[in-house]
Amino acid sequence: YKTNKIKKKSNQLLQEKNSELIVEKEKTEKASQARSDFLSTVSHELRTPLNAINGITHLLLEEDPKKSQLHYLSSLKFSSNYLATFINEILEVNRIDSNKVEIEYINFNIKNLLEDIKNSLQEQAIKNNNNFSLTIDPKIPDNLIGDPTKLSQIFMNLINNALKFTKDGKVNVTAKLITGDTKTAKIWFDITDTGIGIPDDKQEIVFESFSQGSVAINRKYGGTGLGLTIVKKLIEILGGTIALKSKLGKGSTFTFGLDFIVDSNPVQITEKPAI
Ligand code: ADP
Image (cartoon, rainbow, N blue to C red; front, top):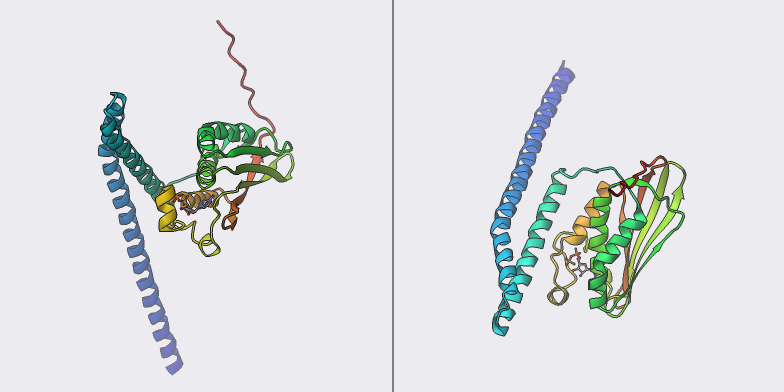
């Protein structure tokens, strides 16, 4: 009788503990939802006046301003651009963290995607006097199915960083087929630069939100400290992982691998006849 009583009591205690845990979990979920809604509302509210500031600055710059005004307007343009990037990145992290980002499977060609990105960043490469090249494994199938929008976002962030933190050096993007058959392809991507490198004790934390090399580096190169956070989260959504190898003063390599479906029966887009 006594052991039965103890059993009953401990069951009751367990049940109480369980319902306490459920209430606690609901509270945490509500708090995180409230935080996410708050961030989203504030960011959207900030975006509207910022668009006006951006637009007016742009107009004033087009009106052939005096030299002294040009200086102030350029600084205004830089700051409002920075704020716009920052707000967009906060919105993006928030969207990812609240599971609002889904994979969109589309047919695409990795070679074309990387060449388009290279063209769009060529100006930046020239500005820093960098040799920017692509090495694409010819064995990679032409028609892959994946999420080219997220992939572009990942590459843009990583290559932008590589070009930004490298001067008079080399930036190379490699795409290598690791395993593949008629149905799937595993591809490894390397983004390598010969830039300033990342010290050993910072390599673990560069993927964390708002982490930057140092105050001095941040002052010199700018940036929000959210780019690599977004990159890591997007790669994880796509089912991959990212690794970093870097040596201070020598350069860095960011590596990630992803699986793709091979589209063995792509829809042929025939050109419309000229009328
Ligand atoms: P940011 O917007 O500041 O560039 P990121 O999240 O993209 O933010 O990067 C975080 C930090 O990691 C950077 O501030 C820089 O210190 C370091 N970092 C990122 N990529 C490189 C690179 N290719 N070479 C050297 N340092 C880098």
